[in-house]
Image (tube, rainbow, N blue to C red; front, side):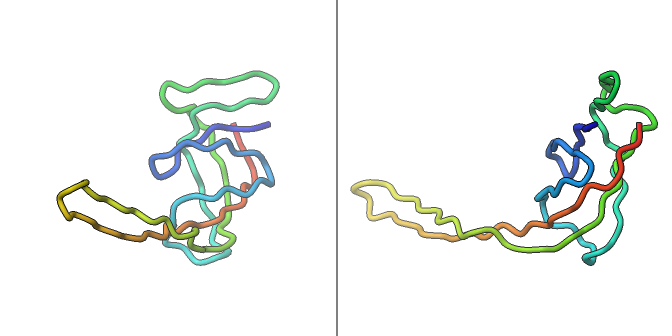
Length: 102
C-alpha cells in the first residue's frame, strides 16, 4: 500500500517503512508527525481525493537533519563586466514513514 502526500508544498510517494528526504522541519530527531494532506491512497482499491482523501492519515517520525551539496549560482552578462557568484546549501530532514491509514 502506498499514498501520495502533500508536505510543505511538495508531493511525495509514501510507502510504509520508506525514508523520505523533505525540506527542513523544526522538530527534534525522533519526533512523531501526522500528515493528513493525503492526495491518493492505493491498497485493494485506489482512492483519489478532491483535493484530499477524507479520513486518510500518514504517520511518520523524524530520523535526522542535514544539508545537501553546495550549488554554485553564477550570473554574468557578456561584455558588461557583470559577474556574481553565489553558493547555496539546502537544508533537509529525513523522515521515516510508519503507518498509512485510509
